[in-house]
Image (cartoon, rainbow, N blue to C red):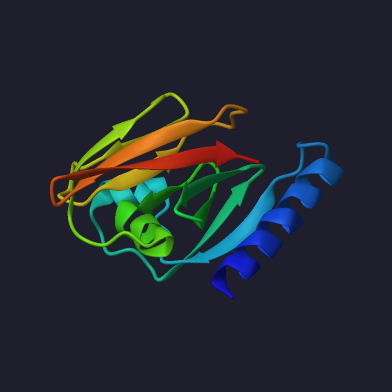
Length: 139
């Protein structure tokens, strides 16, 4: 059911972006999402944030997907939970950090989407000595 909801959200977003000619931002209300300014202050983040974006970034592993609004930041833990990976991430590698990045400045990994892209990218996350390669795309 979760995957169905995500796919429907992704299709609605893609339609809205196509209809708007990629000039009108999409507004998201995402539970637990960390917006960049809040993530950098170290202050407690609200359980719900409003983010506007004209693109999304999809993280896919083993048939599970997490859809992240573009131009936003989110805890890596939220992505991993949604795609079925558990445990503490000790290392993160990104295929192209100009598109999206991961930082651990506060002791917690935060993933940030920087700009839209049309390539298939990857994020490698090391958990319990195992490196998991997550496919990252933008629709």
